[in-house]
Image 1 (cartoon, rainbow, N blue to C red):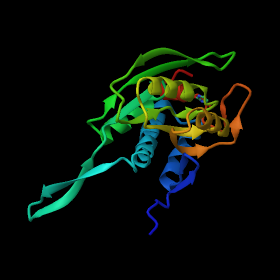
Image 2 (spheres, helix red, strand yellow; image 1 turned 180 degrees about the vertical axis):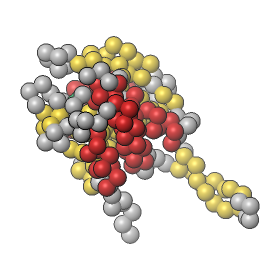
Image 3 (cartoon, rainbow, N blue to C red; image 1 turned 180 degrees about the horizontal axis):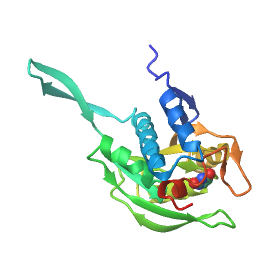
Image 4 (spheres, rainbow, N blue to C red; image 1 turned 45 degrees about the vertical axis):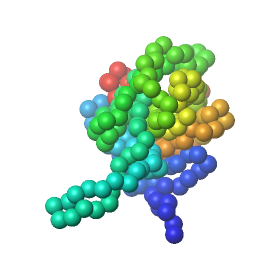
Length: 217
Ligand code: URA
């Protein structure tokens, strides 16, 4: 029996969401004329789809439920979830996770990219307990992989051993770096783009996600 969703093509530990709705949402996000209010709405919708895929393998436990007619078997999630948006762009994906999983706990990681070296530095970290929890790291643009790797490092140092990165657009360079430095981290993304330009922006990409989300262009 094929138990894998036909909507997903696995590539190592990276899963590319292959769904017409995701592709159409991403096309509108890429469109340079999409204004911030619509960008926020579309980003949230795409994050919902990514979150559904990222949580496909979360363990469940058997339970019983009384319907109006009888008692039947059901399941509940057996592993608590933690969402960790990387400030600030990851905030555009957080509401999708909290709506799908209202009981999720939320941590924050603040990373900024040096515009000359492109190296990230951690300026803020506030994390709930991460041991024995499924961590959803929210970072919409996996570019060089430096920020995602730094975020994963800080999560692992805080005890996380089950991390899935939800990314809207990924560059092959970023995926390779993340898998090399953090082989156990899964990536779920809506697209693997062509590569990076000389400013480490993803091409074709969608520009600066945070600027487009918050209208700071
Ligand atoms: N961060 C962004 O917001 N966009 C890119 O293309 C790369 C990093």
